[in-house]
Image 1 (spheres, rainbow, N blue to C red):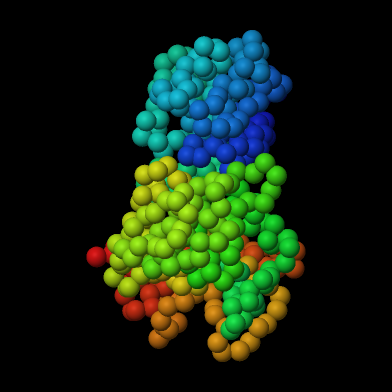
Image 2 (image 1 turned 45 degrees about the horizontal axis):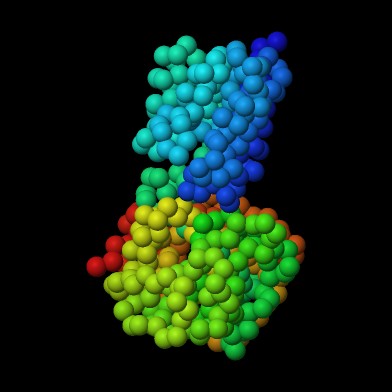
Length: 382
């Protein structure tokens, strides 16, 4: 039997292993590895924590002597540099594996493209590209951060079927059902940071944590140009890290553990959120989920900073004229001033509809309330 017939099945098993590290590995990527001798799986492993053993090392340890002459399936190109752990290429060579199959190359300049030459010089066959799309999607946050220096930004919003995020009196609990809210908590456990605007903090008083037992807790970021926020908000609690992004106005009476980032103004009157994202990226924050409200969402979109939209639609109509809608900002004059979505996916979560898509930043379809055309890389603030 040709062992290559089962390559895809073994790589899918490695992808399943990698998924076990979701929420815990950043800023490192999620990686899974499977060691197969003949048609028998003799070792599996995944990267669980930064500084801990890499997936290949854990799988090789489980395989022991059976790794000699085996094939190693790994979801990301094995590293070839010394970081907090030794190179995985060295471990594969010492184990005397016969063949290494990687799903996708590592975009990290310290690794990219090096594994092939090192392994092949040791007589190990190296192949790359099997299920590369699935592997790239798995580590979309890491790939984006490595290539841009910015966290990958997910904008999450919830509204009624007519696009209202609250009543005209500000009531918004709960537009979506329990299943959708549970999904959001699961998302929080997988991202490096979550963000809300000051208005949402005042009205909803969210805790911004992942209410799952043993879950990773993200950095909490609050954006308020004035910094005038209640000291009693649940988001300021001492456990975990919390930041306030503000303008130059000093805030009053906030807890001492709140870290402040002073951002310059943007040309449209808000804060230069791109500057804040650059600072997060430099601090090894690979992903950020923005949870509202409408004005913050509009600022993120106007500055071209959103990489993925996740929109919940609840099965109800609110009506009226004064209730706030998904996105704030001035009113557009033309339909083509709206924002297009690509790679759109739909699924139900309980009774709610979840729409996921990638913003299309193009002159023909951009969220540009002031009539300006967004370049492909988004707006640069003066």
